[in-house]
Length: 440
Image (cartoon, rainbow, N blue to C red; front, top):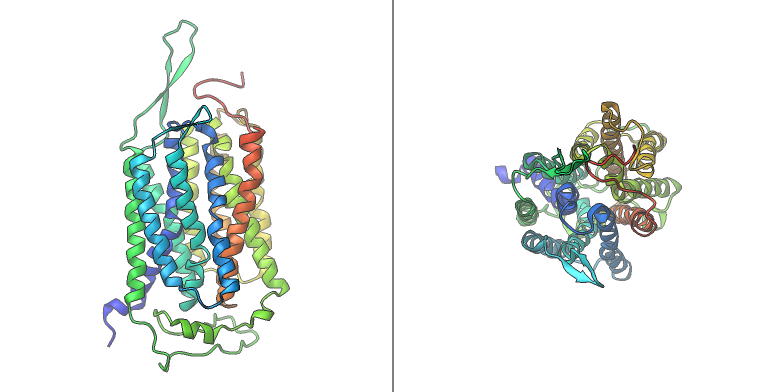
């Protein structure tokens, strides 16, 4: 008789906590931006720097993809995951201690420790998409959605802590000068950024321990009667068919090779290519383009608007993943329509950023509601797309999940690289100043 330790609900919890560690570090960096952006010398350009560092983190998945191509079946995914999780824990500890240090580079002050450690954490997060996702092929398909829920928690938990921290609050006080101007007075947070980064360290540690627990639990016996080869799909059958029927237990590496349901040569079908391209475009917007200009689209309406957009947008992420666990769109056309409708909101946000520091409805409640709502719907819609496409590709095979991670990272890379010169080199997007009416 199996103990409670081997029960399926425990597996779901461990998988969710494991998935949480995949992006909790980068999500924490984004959530804490309203605090550090007013301290570090890069100021409003810091989001563009962070997006670029996340893009450079794709060195990790590119290296992993090349290793999978030239040495197929020789990579110990468990060992790689353990190594990158340990690296993330170590980098987060150093970040908590040295994030505020500045270094002179070519006569200008830059937050080199913060940027360097952010790159290390981005490298780990990007590599997780081509290691964590393929590893999840060992589990039945419902666990891939649990994994994405965990990725959503990687945004939710930092947001909850940020709410308790009370970031982004300021008051405009009368200046001592007689000209009636106002000066910004930034309210002190309930606890400093250093404590927030220590919280990130704890979350990464919990994720690492959860994966360790998954690996030490018993795996399925290759001769067990409940291990089944993939069934032949029956036309009209709407139920998901899993090649891995082990309750909540993972299968072995040999079983993964046996049950790969689609020969490698038949993977690149028009429908699979369409899903991968749709996944890449959606991640280019959600992980590269829009985060680079979030400060420009929100800060003209106030720091609290920026804070609400970051926090509530990230809360929409796990909620959308949770919805996908019960209502999963399996139609490629339906996913395309959803992407097209959801694409209206990033267009609106890009227009706001381009019109910064004087966007429409400035100074009105309706303007604030529109920008915050747009960020919530945009984040939720594209989070749902990622889960739905990931679930469909899980049914194709182990290699499909590898390519799923590759396209997620490729889209993020293209999006970030396309925005960095516009933001930090050509200064297409203009910033305003707190408590100064730049549109008078």
